[in-house]
Image (tube, rainbow, N blue to C red; front, side):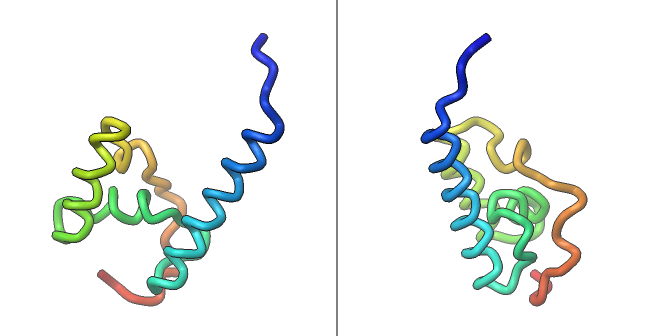
Length: 79
């Protein structure tokens, strides 16, 4: 069994928290990441389409894999 890097996990958690904060600042659900929000809107919003295309270069299908169906209900601004 591979031993988990506790410091790596710590920094990963911080990055997710920053991502969720950015989404909340942009009137989104504070429990949802920008990638999840973008993945849900990739076919209806230009900004989401372009963001997902850029992220696809780094991680194929990143937005699709990031979608959290149970998050997004507390979004302030409808896209």
